[in-house]
Image (cartoon, rainbow, N blue to C red):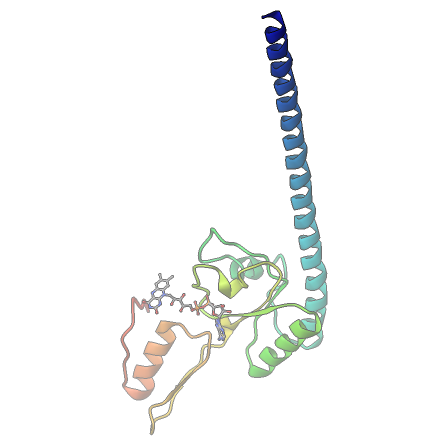
Length: 185
Ligand SMILES: Cc1cc2nc3c(=O)[nH]c(=O)nc-3n(C[C@H](O)[C@H](O)[C@H](O)COP(=O)(O)OP(=O)(O)OC[C@H]3O[C@@H](n4cnc5c(N)ncnc54)[C@H](O)[C@@H]3O)c2cc1C
């Protein structure tokens, strides 16, 4: 009986000891995982900063308009439609010509940065902001011309056009219309 009790207490204390050690191991593992995640975040942010410098310099040299990092314009452009999925781009180009777009894409390629077009910016997954950190965003906000061929009625629509731009141009230039959603003037 005494021997059984001794074995029980021995086993219990061993289990408690074991449990304690497991908890400590789990805590250490969690701490290590948190440290690794923090290091990953830091290295990712450092990498975004380095890419940002390279791409910004390239865009500046190529005279591609950009939303300067930290400016009100930059903050506005990277503000996601779905605020649950914000991302930090390496840079935001604001082209007004096809040449600007070409040069921006070249800058992204030379800097090994992924490039994402942003048209309306309404993607629920923030794909217009790249869907992840570190992209060069080519924001088409300033390219919203719409021209309607008066003979063929074929419309040529720049990628930054909103429904309002398109609907009004179709009517004004060709007395044409299309079905669409809400369209405040
Ligand atoms: C309130 C609301 C109502 C909606 N109603 C409708 C509806 O009635 N009908 C409907 O069809 N959809 C509707 N949508 C969906 C919306 O139209 C889509 O989000 C839209 O199709 C995405 O276009 P965007 O220009 O906003 O793309 P963005 O968000 O700018 O980009 C989305 C993706 O397309 C890529 N992309 C953008 N522009 C270009 C380009 N020029 N060239 C190549 N790739 C490009 C981006 O890189 C990104 O991967 C609605 C969305 C919202 C928020």
